[in-house]
Image (cartoon, rainbow, N blue to C red; front, side, top):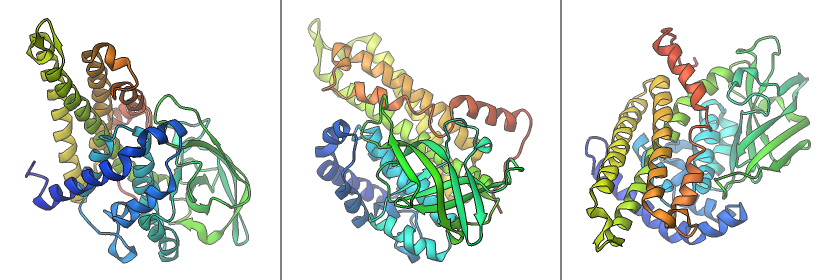
Length: 388
């Protein structure tokens, strides 16, 4: 136990969550990977156990726990070896629900946040667009106010939970003249007329329903605006710190899973009369892999501590995602190599793990964009500040 960050209560939660995943999730993973769909019943079970409410306010059914329960939640999800299943869970809990909690009014929280915590409603966050990618400020989706309604037109893509979610948290331009201050955040029900989704066929994350979503004259009540009109961009930027740290934690956890699997394999597998863990070249490779995992993990824990304490960690979270996702790709690549031909077989975990991991440097802001953001802070001394 890392007593700098985790208490006995944290570790008890980790063990109970691991047991839950092994009993309720792992037996279904291969089916969900094949079908490209996570069945509805598991969302309800997560809700009944309180897993969607770890960091949510008690007033709306959450548990109000510190961020290290979230760290454990993320780490253990990576170790069921389905990046798609994990993404469905954390995109609901830490992308869609974060906006509900931070920008939603009491009505929205009671109608959407509480059922989300209970596992009765599934959410998705719609920011990325087909022509925009990481350029959030350049989005083209519009929300035009007409009386007591907004009319939404445009499209989003690469949206996790984009097909089977019950509601959508959507960013759209309310002022076309202002690039950064003209954006707002809305919530809308899936069955609202004019919303259509197309499921995307992906290299990895096969269990996740990733979609392109179109909005064709979608009318929603004006009260479905979340927070202030025109404040969408700073809201999004503020929450990116958590999203990037989530992806950094995911990365070190799946890399740790790969190393642990390799250690067990090398202990059992023999060549030339001795187990693989006795060959110096392989031992040193594992030593390097394990060292890189530890370095990223400890950094991510320290950033989680600062975020939990209320610090604004956009630079550090960006660094976490940039380096941790790169490390995970490289460590998992080496892990597959250490399994030899078996690493290339689907019945072993490394092939899927390699495919799933490759999204790390792409989703939630590409590594190229993160480098420029970090460069602005380090070289140009740009300061990003929380939305007020």
